Amino acid sequence: MGRYYGILQQVIAAWQAKDVEAVLAHMADDIVWHYAAGAMPPVRGKVAAAKLLTRFQQDMHAIQWRIFAHAEAGERLFIEGVDEYRTTDGIRVAAPYAGVLEFRDDLIVGWRDYVDLGVIAEQKSGAPLSKQVSGLLDRPLAG
Image 1 (cartoon, rainbow, N blue to C red):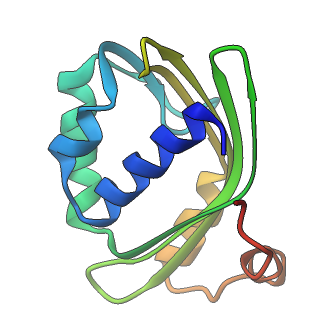
Image 2 (image 1 turned 135 degrees about the vertical axis):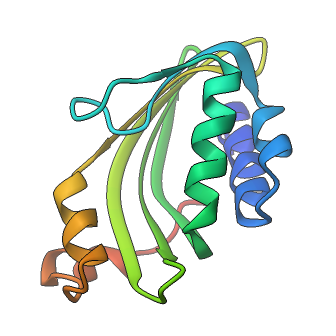
């Protein structure tokens, strides 16, 4: 396991425990987080990240954050995975994504998630998981 992947594992554990402060402890004060790169403007700074995490947390339950592949290059961590959770209404959402995290002094300073917001919106409206998404869920997890 790489150094930065180990840090991400701590972030995942904190997020699954719904511990926003523990997640934020791994972010630099000047983080730039593109939570839907290409579709939404980034949040800038730890205060804005805290607001986003708190908002996300309110409708995300039974969180399963799966990482299928990862690689480190310099101070970057590249990941491929699926975020799966249940909404407050009990709707299952599974969002495949790829992401890039940039680190400085073991803190996340840049985070870009590449995700299809249309897939998430479709699922939140009650549509079942597509065959494409279902096919991505049962792959072996990264070590």
